[in-house]
Length: 602
Image (tube, rainbow, N blue to C red; front, side):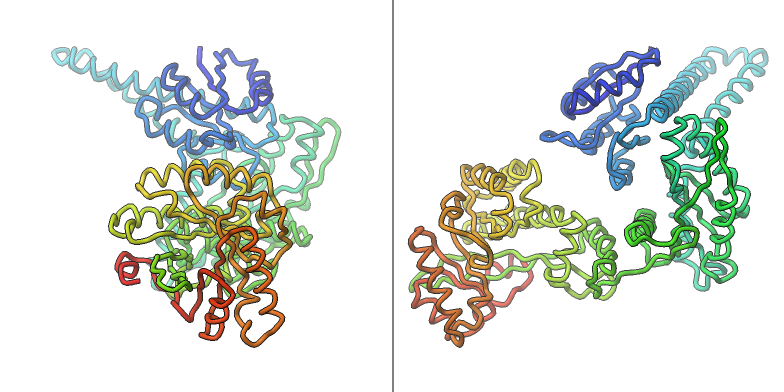
């Protein structure tokens, strides 16, 4: 009897999966955390794992899968991810997942996918057993070659059959019998490689992403059997329209993809219109009900500059999302529209998602630093602020954070950027013991999005311990509006790290709506006055009065003050007269790359 391990931090979800799989003759096991799942898998060796992606506060599904695959004892156990987010799919396959199920789950789909993976594992185990038996028999019957030759040939044929069956199951969708996402990935990657090597390509390949708009209506009203039949008929419809050289695949749910060669020079428009016209004529009948379908069709040309299949699919998904978001016309093809780094509109900056994901994947970020200047006479303490820069993949030019941080927040990537900064800054300090002795404090910015992420404080403490950096050397700048927007989370996060020794600075002080009450509730060590008030305070009496009042407020709270955007000697002198302890700006130091040599000379 096969064993299936269900992993979800919500008992109700486990109960739902147990009820869905009750028809299987299987031993159902359960775990409510990634750590427990790893322990059970190593001890009980289940035949299949259904793994939820999000399981706070422990390790998530992706990390659980990576650890299972890293252990030889559990590496061959297939993992099906259960997720409500479509953008988790690529990450799941990269972590070693064999398949995925979308939430809310569809019982028929769950059972079909589980059956598929159990069958595949059974075949794999049979193949291994046959290999072992074959080897034993060859050793035992060397002296009887004539008599056993026929039997050996038969077993080899069986082995080839099973290997072919395994290869087929690994590269095809079990409902439609089309190629699956994994097979499309391999095909696109190979075509991209050839495109990058061709000096004068004979044709221009395009990827078409086809979403059935009414699939859920059929599936919900008529059941999953009708839904599967619709998918099969739809697949047959598409297969009858494409050429022998074209590559058709089902990506999952109601989504199909077609890799086609653009031989007519119309960027795939002719074939796309042919497909959409056939879909418009297509009628799906089930139990006396007739359904007309519509589809969203997005077209993305393959270009030599594309780094991977994931990058191509990102463009296709962005295009389909733009059509749905803008209410684009159905029944007509829609082409990918590049946003470009210089665009800033709500739709034009969609290209930032791809750019930032690619930069994080290939470390196309770098760190600069700017020294904080003490204004008190005789003070020689070295404090710096670490600043992120993005490296343009084409020109190698540096892009200031003002251009990419807002898109990073919109696309939920700023947390990854903040964590990248943390890892690299602490790694540099950890590798240079002399610098750890020389530097009093390194300041890092944390966005409001990152501040709300679970497990961040524990991750910071782990990094400090790993690199042997004293916690009091690390100071986090949190904007006034970010801390007020999530006061309870900010307080808990800050108290946990301050108890460990880290420091905190309230950034952009004066630009929001902070009050004495908020400043007393949150354990900030320093206040940083917004540069908007500092830059021209020597010429603007109102700005000078605002800075004076903020310094006086900080004095009442017994908190040191940092002033940013100090760009002239008169401004620096006024700040010193007001009692500001630290200044930061081009007047004292222009940002430069963060290296051990630069810090030693600072």
